[in-house]
Length: 186
Length: 358
Image (cartoon, rainbow over all chains, first blue to last red; front, side, top):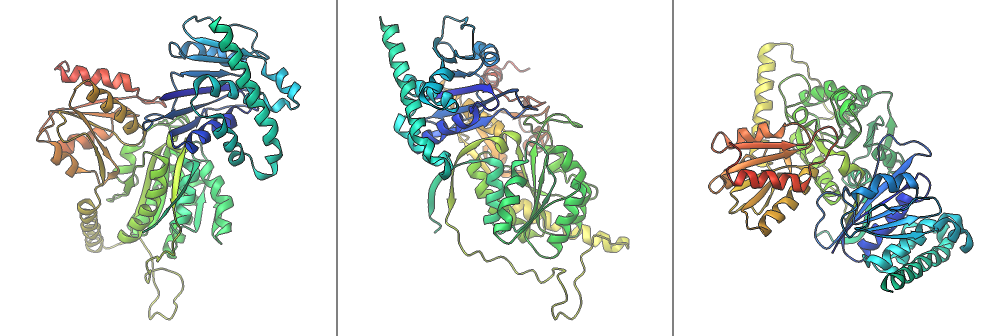
């Protein structure tokens, strides 16, 4: 098992913390994990991304140059990283902020209007975890329980009141991925 | 035995900070620079919890001289920076080496020369292993390749500094500072730090005062001092070589790489072995003293060497010295903040093994 996951979006969309959550979940399952942020001369409102590698064998370079999965939280991220996804890889797209479609037909793409769905659940900040829920369902890279367990470690204690709503977000994403799979099967 | 505790996910820069504190470091003087700023940031919070002192100086020149002072007073002390800041510190490092004081200096390397950029690189290898500042001296240089090693090596860095009265440099690249990996900390133990009766920390009933100096104005005296340093370096070269061997026993082509480059090279070795090619890796853990013994050990089976670095060819000079003309030594590298790619290196390996390099 090897997944090189690239999570990209605007600064402030929870891109880095989503990656940490995923890495933590992999660690809880005793897998090899590495997390690395883009740390260029970034600016407020600019793009942010991080790479998360989860693997059964030791990880060579933690930098994800050819992602098996891309989470594109905004349009510039999709444009920049779509060409780099491996063949038969997965693109998870936040269609709330991306009004274009994936050009390639050799990857699997799933569109999730995460911002609207997050508002419906009741907190705009959980959009990233809806998409993370879909990723977990589609790849099986870690279990959903491990992600919830990681929330307890990654969120500071004073934010533990947000665990339930984040769990709901992960569930929502899982359901959407299941539906997408049914659709593809038909 | 130290028992291992449960894992935590930690950034390399923070791991250096925590590792240093656990190794008994109580003083840090530094100035922020990417890609190592999380380290001073971490220690700014952590050191006061241990009754230590964190101080952001007005410049790197100032920071290293504060390190000189604290080391002279007998404390475990550290500073950190990246390329441009480390260059500014070189005068002070030379003084510390001359005065024979223990301290730890972290260089989280970035692209150069000049301001270069802030991306990960191994651009300061030669500066680090050839002394770095003026005069006739060496600095012990330890090169971790994972966040766990960073933690483990911080103990070694401070111990070696104290044992040999020398500055020790932790030489890593920006990736190791920025990445998060699972780490396990050993259970905290009461540490017995060595006595430092030579420290300039007040007379304390001694008959004469301790003086710390790097000035030997009489040539005969300085020559004696230089030979004394030389003897010390010879002992370090004999006793402190450290390296990792990866599939080297029967390797016909031996890769050599340190830090992040070595991680990439391990993937290359795995791939080569899957295809039946006898490829191995020597990963210097100490880059000074350079692991000469590792090369003597593999020379019977090795037909050629390929050095991989995140620069345009620096450690390859030491590999050539170690191989001493017995076999050909080749180089491939990516400078400027770019990373060597496993597939590219593998192509190079295949070319060399099919005799295509000539």
